[in-house]
Amino acid sequence: MTSTVPNAVQHTDAAAPPITMFGPDFPYAYDDFLAHPAGLGQIPATEHGQEVAVIGGGLSGIIAAYELMKMGLKPVVYEADQIGGRLRTVGFDGCDGDLTAEMGAMRFPPSSTALQHYIDLVGLETRPFPNPLSPATPSTVVDLKGESHYAETIDDLPQVYRDVAEAWNACLEEGADFSDMNRALRERDVPRIREIWAQLVERLDNQTFYGFLCESEAFKSFRHREIFGQVGFGTGGWDTDFPHSILEILRVVYTEADDHHRGIVGGSQQLPLRLWDREPQKIVHWPLGTSLSSLHGGEPRGAVTRLTRTAGNRITVTDATGDIRTFRAAVFTGQSWLLLSKIDCDDALFPIDHWTAMERTHYMESSKLFVPVDRPFWLDKDELTGRDTMSMTLTDRMTRGTYLLDEGPDRPAVICLSYTWCDDSLKWLPLSPKERMDVMLKSLGEIYPNVDIRSHIIGNPVTVSWENEPYFMGAFKANLPGHYRYQRRLFTHFMQDDLPEDKRGLFLAGDDISWTAGWAEGAVQTALNAVWGVMHQFGGATDATNPGPGDVFDEIAPVELPED
Image (tube, rainbow, N blue to C red; front, side):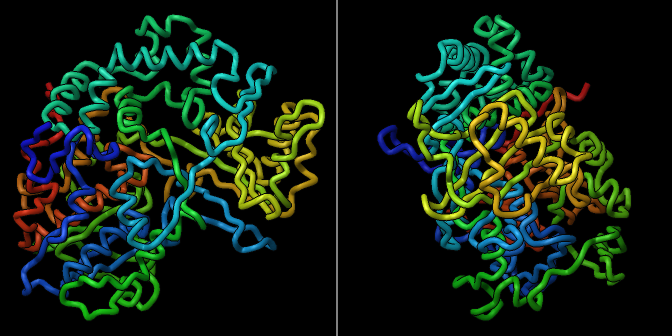
């Protein structure tokens, strides 16, 4: 297939690369951009050493800071809590330090190709994540309405579950040209991607996920829609997404973001932490041995409390210590709601339409609870049935999804007793960690009456409700119907030549700015957009052989829907 985009590598069908989360809204090959020997671009030598504020030390902020440092700029990273953001890995008090829990991001699809660049760069290993019915999962139990079914593959489930899977496939084919778009993405056929997606955006922007199902002949059965919502396929049930825009769901399934997940051995937070300490071998202006850590004396600056525009179109940042610094450019990577509440902001920071888009951003809630156990006892075989004692569990009970994570048969292990979203997450919010654990064990005890899970627990639970975290106020963005225009404004904000001069210089990044919120890949992509924006702001440019996202923007810009 051919493409008019200079950055897009041409592939034959026989050598097609793995599918990538580079589309369909903005089909730019970020993985090719990162892999190119020419690098991401250069700034004039007269600008070397100039400070750039990077607000937020999550994955997006650390990647933006790392790449700006390599160009010869001096990133000044502000972080209110800890490096990593929602790549948060924690241990258990009194337990082996190797025993960890992923409170945020814990599973990453192969289509996260830009993310994989950085995973490889810092030498991290990945392994298959035990999703329901995946090859990495010995067994799965589906428990609905008090009836449990044990399965090692989907063929072990009753026919109705296979009917639901087939209905979902048919629904995608009928209503969203699934095979055609999936093929175009895999082959990086940019013109075809844009042709299909333009029609779908115009037709489906106002449609909910549930409404999309209801319009399909394949899902005319309420029972099938109910089962699909409660257990789904891939990572589990889909019903918490039912009120959201169907476009959000299509982005996930087209790019196979919900399949073949892998976890990072030792925990995902290692990625931003290793980038923080990494001393790049190809670096401009700074001496070899320079790292983000060394530029900051080991620690980022603290929380930002105030952001203003000052004379000369500068961005002035006040932190929690009262320190005030002024920058020619800044990158904001925190969740956008922080600009509405936790940080005192000038209205002049952004055009009014961008403020509106941030105010309309819809975040999903999410809760998890983990416990450490003495060993992976769930692999013991039941003497009567020959089945695993306990399985990865999908249920309509309070726990919804239970994941079993082990490091080997004779080593301590971890159970994620519950992973829930939206209303299911809010049900846990008033409860203490112990109260949460007790309710979860009661629910699981009704599914596994002969299994004493509590007797294997060797430490206190760890839990999180992201909607209650003061610097997040939610887990991740999920657009509602009609929100496409808002998301387009936020994603394209790094293209600032058409903005008034007094609205330039502050760049938005982070997964909620991306088209694929909730996926680390979106954080990486928007960080690279912001790096391009800052480089352009300082009069820099990419190499002609490796055009950046801003260089090809006009050719592949996201669909623009009318405002009237």
